[in-house]
Image (cartoon, rainbow, N blue to C red; front, side):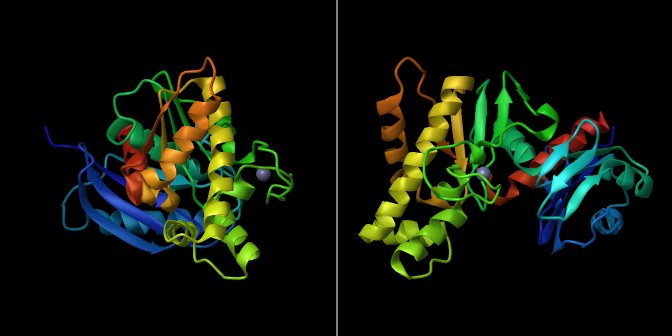
Length: 300
Ligand SMILES: [Zn+2]
């Protein structure tokens, strides 16, 4: 029997990460290109068709399925992108568009959920039954892997960045007090700049400054960590995950950020089980590997 190959695509607002993977998710070829622009999804479907052809060129094989993940609200059952601010899409039936372009099974999903699935099967949450994978990037959304499978609710579940953690900052969603407005990587950099008049390129730079003893950086970081603690407290009370996997540049500092988060949380849990807090293992590759997992499922 010949081993199946799948093509996996992590489509972001600015670039597309693509890989040709075997059944063990070993990467045989890869591409990274700018995202094709267009609000109806056809340009992206065309580009993915071309990229699949280039990925398999030289292998003398066809792919058994294609997996594509994007940011936003994705109904993966219906194969429809309900809303993606980064891509400028609204109600795009992308799975159908791509099936028309490629004559193979197509899996279409959400980047954070797929990345979480990859951490759950292959990375930091491997071996646990219930996990929450929480990448802290420009925004904050959670992948919920509960009792062995992703919980999706038509793409609407897991928006942890928009729970109210009690502060006066405005969020991009229009509400006040959202976790994301104080603890996302973008918010940490913005709040440091607002407090000091010194720009910060990202959350990592604020962490570095805090490590070097900068009291403003330490204060901004502490507020972010406490807000994340509140978010994880709510998650723990509602869903009782055994492990919470944290990703993004903020957690590149490992225990420097995780330890205060553990202390904040464990001091406030009463009857709830303290989840293990771990740093994500798959980094930037999680979305593409997750797309590969979805493609392998579609290939049957
Ligand atoms: Zn919000």
